Picture (spheres, rainbow, N blue to C red):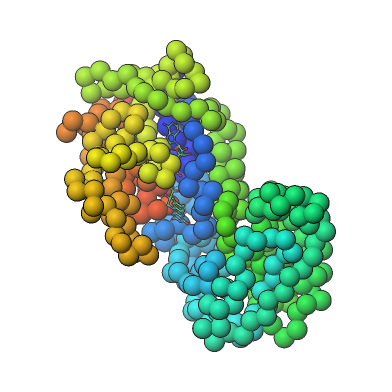
Length: 375
Ligand SMILES: Cc1cc2nc3c(=O)[nH]c(=O)nc-3n(C[C@H](O)[C@H](O)[C@H](O)COP(=O)(O)OP(=O)(O)OC[C@H]3O[C@@H](n4cnc5c(N)ncnc54)[C@H](O)[C@@H]3O)c2cc1C
């Protein structure tokens, strides 16, 4: 099978690259093994402030609403984090004390939302909190089975019955000026969080739950749908296992499912993620990149990979494959002519491109611009 570009990895970086190349009239395929970091996404894009117009347009065309104001976001355990570019349903506040009195609402049988931690965190900031559980029979675990009480399963029901939830909250509200709800709305119908906000007489704040992240899964679904609508070939559940490289040029990629039908292309993009997604793999002696055997930047002494203060930034998170300024991946000290490394597989090797989701988007665009500028 022959394409203009083959992208390995269908997370944020791979999808942004795929959509941009399809929009530019290129034929592409994305090979994507499994879950990606978007399934754990908070909804705020690290190191992105106001994005360039092309990024804003890319998300808008995929049906993903964004806002860009600076502010702080309430985290699942009641702490706050500074954020900027975020999904539309993520509330950002100018300061941590965003209300006087807060009603925290959870659903009976749902254990992946931490009401008490939230209340403790908010009370420290001078907000008075009440926690209430409401019983929504449609998501009752005795009907669904406890294994079904995960954010995404609940969200499928909530998009249909959100008006019932609003009615229950109206009965509970006293003098609170804010209501906190688990982020289990708007999986399939992106208008639901906005409608809940309009229907309640208090500020409504949706707060993250245990994974999977509903806004993250929705973002992944919408980007993938957009990519496919533009004609991209998404090879779901397949894995790039090795490549044919000759004299610094990649000719084809072998995947687990396609067996002897190699994926051939003029350009290849490696967006297989970091250690978390198996784009990088570790053993007791080294960190390596499993598809091409690219050069990887990491500390020789394994004891220095971790900081025992586990809440601090961990050195291993900065390790990544080596790539030149235009993100051509490097093997044995030399850049490959037509292989680009993008997203979290780069670790912190290119700090000028940001970190987290910002790195995924910025590096994807650098690779796309390079590919489009080539004859
Ligand atoms: C748990 C977690 C939460 C995060 N939350 C945030 C956040 O809230 N905000 C933020 O800005 N950043 C966050 N990040 C940082 C995150 O790395 C980026 O946001 C970004 O989503 C990374 O995208 P990516 O496409 O580079 O990699 P990934 O999202 O990791 O995607 C890589 C994909 O490649 C696939 N893959 C791997 N090997 C192969 C192979 N050989 N063949 C085919 N496919 C393969 C994987 O299965 C995966 O689907 C988080 C990271 C983690 C790990």
